[in-house]
Image 1: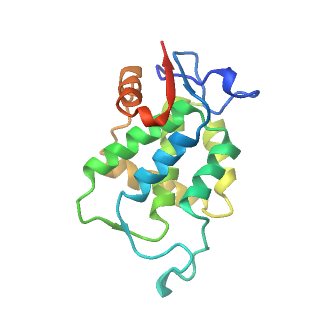
Image 2 (image 1 turned 30 degrees about the horizontal axis):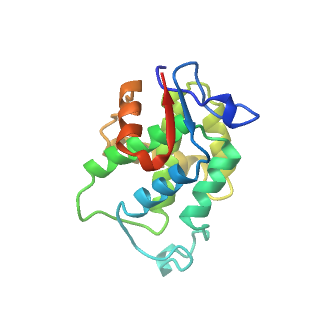
Length: 186
């Protein structure tokens, strides 16, 4: 794959889903990129209820952490690379372009959008199953494999299976969004 890898200088251990290509690193911390993702997903569509008080027809669902906490936990536990986060953001942008303006979601839709985008980014960027498996394990207390697979299928359907991302698109996205505080080196 031609998508950038994370430099090993940002972590003492290799991050999930890295490749031997141009490097993409956080300037100081992943916080600006994670905050951007949280804001982007949070504003994507109108969700039915507060995460801690699901409507009665959702009472069988578990209580989820805030989207902020959830995204941070998955990022840290799965050691997601900057490249995976950028590819996921590109996918979320594509999803936003395809969603009807009056789209609505359930109380956990933002969590599902994040997971689907990140899982698909891992699958696109690194065909080994380690990154995806680490995400599945990380969220297994919240979502089953069947639910995760359904999230992927739904996401793919909305974006019309448009997953291809090359280094030029990644570089362009990073350049268009300087608040991500990412360093791109060819």
